Image (cartoon, rainbow, N blue to C red; front, top):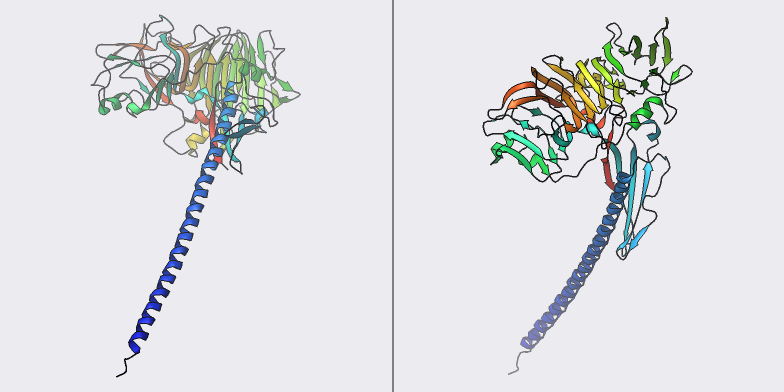
Length: 513
């Protein structure tokens, strides 16, 4: 009987199929392996590229930081309007290279807060493409601070001056000294409503420091995190020459004869108001036009100003003249006095605004010769016609209309006969880096018990001046004023004209390319 062959043929068919499947599987595995290897290689390349790119970015950022540090180290902001290299060429090392260019703003010659754009360029040694960091920086104004001291000691006795539980301070606080805080657990409302920084590494507490988050919030609204110790030392300005030069419009040939000088070219104003000798000064508002009125008195002579923001004119009635002189333009906002300002008071008129736009600011910096020890004495309220409202948007009418005032002197004094409720709408700077004194104080701090001293703006001073006294055992007000200090946040970005700067720069924008 013949053996069937179909069985053998079936076996060969199965072997062939298995072989074919094995070949296909092998091809698939090889393809997947090759793809995986390619993906791995691409991932490795991307990782290396990212590593090199990050190294280039770090170099670019370092170059921009070095350029900003160079700006801070300069005794005065660079006056050129041409781009320049602060690093003196490309800096190279084994990790790569970096360079920087500073572009001054074209508007710098006509503004008191200089602005610069810094471009930092970096390229790692193994990177084929450079990276760029672009920063826009602007001079930082001392008006940034609600409260600033170089020394937390009395300008009168050199003794320690304390913050106590009834004090209320809104806005940023900084001291180059040690903070002294009289506080106990029964105090309900926080003393400080914003950040606090101190160059010292500790706080002097009496009778004790806060012990838990709830107690900390009774001292600082932001709790313990609002306090920074060991902060950088910030020097005060070394003179008021910048304000003097702005008022006169030049840096030499200043008038020496007593009188009020209004620099002009023909009938056009060219600078601010320069006063030689002691004076008294009063601000007022014309009830019919809303114009700013300023009277500057020296002995029996009075110089009368009418500043018309809407029509861009300034009218001056000089002593002895029957007819006023009308100038085109407005003062640049700086009133500089070579002597003491023995009386300062009044109402500061609104800005000229239309809709949601400020067309012309009514902003003033009133300065004396700090290096010569000249003072300003406030004899009554100095207040804005329309105060700003920090709870409202910038475009709210109250914030558009609100003017701005800065006061700079060695000492800024609240006269002993000022009202029980005293209002000062201004940011105040008393003293300088090279003065022995320099303080803001109430002349009747021991002799009279007043109510509240309301300040909208800020206080910057060499030494802390006495405003009043309190009983340290029960925190009860004894004499002088209680402090009611409120920060004007507009001052950080829109300070009074030519108000002193810190030497630091604020970063207004930052981007990488």
